[in-house]
Length: 283
Image (cartoon, rainbow, N blue to C red; front, side, top):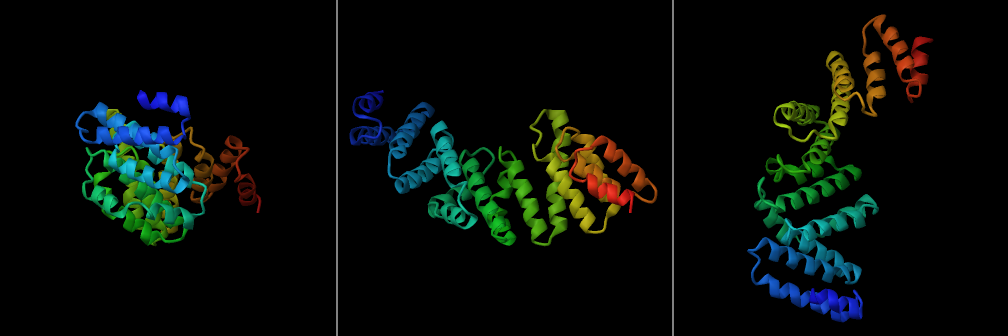
C-alpha cells in the first residue's frame, strides 16, 4: 500500500516509486513460504520492472516468470513477453526466447513435473521456441526443444498447443508415423473427457485434418477418408468441415465420388473448394 501512495504522489514511473517497489520486494524475499507473501513479492517486482527501460524490463520479466511462476504477476510477466515478441520476425523472436536466463531455465526444466508451477512457464518457452524453429524451417530443432519437457506436460494447460506443434514438426521432419502417434493422443484424450469431464482440445479438428492429410500422403486412402469423415461427425461446427467434406469425397471410390461432390456443393455453396468440385463433376 505504501508504494501505491508513493506512486500516486510522485508518479508511477518516478525514481521514488521504483525504489519503493524494489525495497518492498527485497523485504518480502526473506520469507516467501506464505502464498500471499509470494504474491505481494511478485507484484512488487512486476511493478518495479514495468517502469524500467525496455531491455531491463524484458530481462526482469524473464526472471520474474521463472522465479514466481505460480503467482498472478508471474503469469502476467510471461504474457507480456509473449505479446511483446509476437510481432517480431521468426529469427528475431527466436533470439529473444533464446536470450532467456539459460541456467535458471535449465534448472526449471530439470524440475519439470505435473505439479510444479514452473512447468507451465517451461511449456510456454518451449512452445514459442519450437514455433519459431518451424517458421525458420528447422523442424528437427523444434523437436529437440520438446525432448526433455514432453513427459511432464501431460496435465499442462498448454498440452494441446504443444502437441499440435510437435505433430507438425514430426510431419515436416519426414516422420509421418511419429506425427500420427501424437495426433492419436487428441482422439484418446477427447474420448476420456466424456467419462471424467476433462478439457476438450480446441485443436481437435486441426489434429483430425492433419491426420487425414498425412494418411493421404502415405497412400492410405481409406484411413485418410475416415479421418476426414470423423472430423465432420465429431466436430460438426468446425470451420474445417467443408475442407474435410471435399477431401473425403475425392477419396471416395467409383461413382460415389461424383455423388458425394454433388452433396458437398449443396451443403457448402460458399466453400473455397466449390470450383474444384465443379471441375471434377464436369471435366
